[in-house]
Every structure is written in structure tokens, then in C-alpha cells.
Amino acid sequence: MTERPDLPALQRRLAEFAAARNWGPYHTPKNLVSALSVEASELLEIFQWLTPEESARVMADPETAHRVRDEVADVLAYLLQLCEVLGVDPLAALAAKIERNAHRFPAPGERPAPEGN
Amino acid sequence: MTERPDLPALQRRLAEFAAARNWGPYHTPKNLVSALSVEASELLEIFQWLTPEESARVMADPETAHRVRDEVADVLAYLLQLCEVLGVDPLAALAAKIERNAHRFPAPGERPAPEGN
Amino acid sequence: MTERPDLPALQRRLAEFAAARNWGPYHTPKNLVSALSVEASELLEIFQWLTPEESARVMADPETAHRVRDEVADVLAYLLQLCEVLGVDPLAALAAKIERNAHRFPAPGERPAPEGN
Amino acid sequence: MTERPDLPALQRRLAEFAAARNWGPYHTPKNLVSALSVEASELLEIFQWLTPEESARVMADPETAHRVRDEVADVLAYLLQLCEVLGVDPLAALAAKIERNAHRFPAPGERPAPEGN
View 1 (spheres, each protein chain N blue to C red):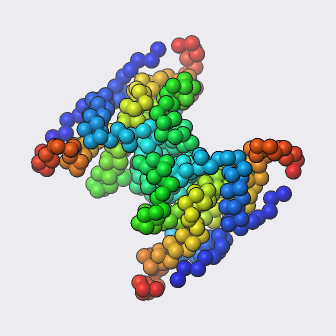
View 2: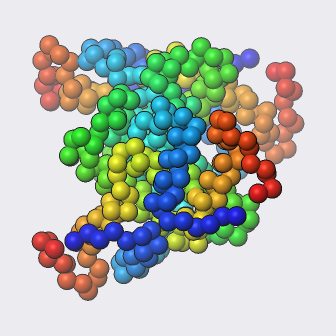
View 3: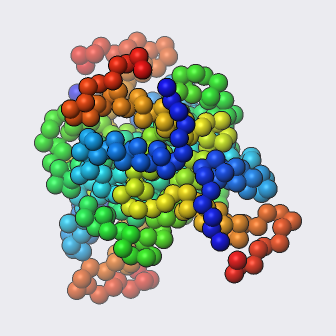
């Protein structure tokens, strides 16, 4: 049974999971960001020898698709655990970044939004 | 004004953002996963020379705190854009992974849950 | 003036450089391997949006060529400094690995060399 | 039997190794730099949960020491193969970088060398 909770619920579940296993001393921001970076590379490893076209078809193979989903989950898990120990709200951080990027990269034919918005 | 939408809403906004700028040809899974890995390393760069204790205090400095939030947003943005082009649901992937890990790493004093669950 | 010394000479020069600046306390294996990984990603960043064909032509642009050489130097520098603090001989490690790979991946039309060699 | 050749000899041997196995089409600069970055992360993985003190003792355990040497070899191998396809001389690049850094980071008690040198 796999329900589909929202991001804050998953972040809390990961925090309880780590607390129940006494992983706190290992979960320094520095260690968690190293683990995040290692997991992102494990995702990259799946694609490293593929052409762009082959990379667009990875999900057609069930075994590779499972591996991709597994590594996506690992990246997200370490990102959420890092945010937990740093007190960063990842959704607010991303929403703020998207706002800034809308100013930095106006779409073609779009007037740049006024900076003060 | 920075509201705080949920993850699927941010994923859609990123997809529209890329579409409006014709970034589709660049957004192959291989390129997006490279960018994800590069952003994770930019986050690591902030911590690379810090002791574990210093790494726990990074958010006390407003400038570093801003940089951390910015890189967290970049990692999450590329992860969501990768999931978009691959058709992966990141919340479902993480929920499934947490279930598997609960079986693999039972908490101390906990009976392992039956495999069939 | 840039002479072209061999690898062990460059490794010694880097060790003296760090010692003269009292960088020893920062140069734990963990920190150096983080820095190595960050520099490898800075090299990747140059290539992340390029097609395979474009990636084969990066050295044609003098500015990009300089950036590539600079990042190659950074990767090699941190690898040598890591080897220094760990007491690893990188040339011996690579020679041993090539021998092992010659057994694992016999060339087409080649008889696998006997394992005991 | 593991002799200890110099870096250019190892670079040539790697090039012959790849040519004999027809790996040329896979060895685009973009793919090789991805592989380099992935191998650097595999080295980081060994250290990710260690304290600085534990990281300084990794070579005391024969099995971990072997793993470290193996990953160092992989990083160096992909760096040399990348240099091969790009026509970059890694030793010259590093020597030039050390010269530049001697200007940028004068040692304590050292007069900065004149820029024109």
C-alpha cells in the first residue's frame, strides 16, 4: 500500500524515521548534502553513456524505470532531510526562485514584470 | 509576493516556464540530470571546508542562508523538471521508497513488518 | 613561464603550497574529496546543455578552452592533494586498475589473459 | 605485475584500450566528463557519513583502502580520457594553474610576485 502524501508529510515521516533509528549524529548538514550529491550522481550514472535520444526512452525499460524512480526518491529524501536540519522550507524556496527567474528571463513577447512585484 | 503552492503546482509552473521560453530541446533527461547533479554540487560547495559544527550553523549568516535556499530551490527545480520529462511522480516514488526502507531498516525494538504488506 | 613537470613533482609542489599557507587543518580527506567532486561538477557544468556534437567542439572557442583547462587543473589538483593526505600513489593505482580491466574486458578477438598473471 | 609508468604513458595505454574495444562513439567529452563526475562521487560516498577524524583513518582498513585506490584510479582514468579527446595536456594545465594561484594566494610573509611574471 503506497498512499501519496504531500511533501511536508513526507518530510515529517523522514524525520521520524531518522529519529527512531538514532541517525541524528550522522545527519549534519554537511553529511546530508554530501549524500544528496552522491545520489544525484547515481541518477546521472544511469544516463552517462546514453545518447540524448536514448535518454528520452529510459522509462520504456521496466528495470531502468524502477532504478530511475528509486534514485529520484533518494535525491528527494536527502533534500528533504537537509531542509529539515537547516530549517529551510523547500516549497517556499522554489516559489521564490521561480518569481526571481520570471524577472531574469522574460518569455519572448513578454514585458518584463516590474521589479517591485 | 511569494505564495506557497504545493509540489505538483510548482512542477506545472516550471513546465509552463520552460515551454514559454522554448527550452524543450535542451531539456532532455540526460541534460536535466546533469544540471541536477551540478546544482547539488553547488550546494556542497557551500559546506566543503566547514567542520560538522560550522555546517550546523550556516543559516545564522543571512547571506549564506540566502545562498543555501537558492541552491535548494535549484536542486528541487531540476528534479521536478526531470520528473516532468520522464513522467515520474516524485511524491509517489518517495512514498514507495520510505515503505521499502521501513522493511529494510526496522527501528530498534520494532518487529520487522511482514514483507507482504 | 610554465614548465611541464611530472605528476609527482606537481604533487610535491601542491603539498608545499598548502603547507606554506597553513591549509593543513582544512585538508582532511573528507574535505578534499568534496572539493574534488565539486570541481568535477564545474567541469560538467560547461557541457550540461551541449549536444554530443557541440561537446566535441568546445576547444574551438578560446574562452571555453581556457575554462576547460582551468577546471581540469582543479580536478587534478584536488585529486593529488587527496592522494597526498591518504598516502595513495595515483599512478600505481591507475596502472593496477588498467591491469584488472584488461582481464575484465578482453578486447574483441583477444584471448582473456590468464587470471594468475 | 604492476609497473609504475608516468602519466603520459598511462594516458596512451587508456587510449589504446578504448580503441581496441571500439569505445570511441561513447567517449564524447560530455559522456566522459559525466563519468568523471560520477566516479568522484563514488569516492565521496566512502566518506559521506564519516567524521573528519574517521576520514583521516580510512586507509587503516585494508578493504576500504582498496576501494579508495580503485576509485582514485577511476577518477584519474576518466580525467585522462577526457584530456585525450579534448587535446588538453593535464600536467601543463596544472602547472599553469599553480603559477596563477601563487600570484592569487601569496603565502604569509611572502611579497606577492609581480603580476607580469
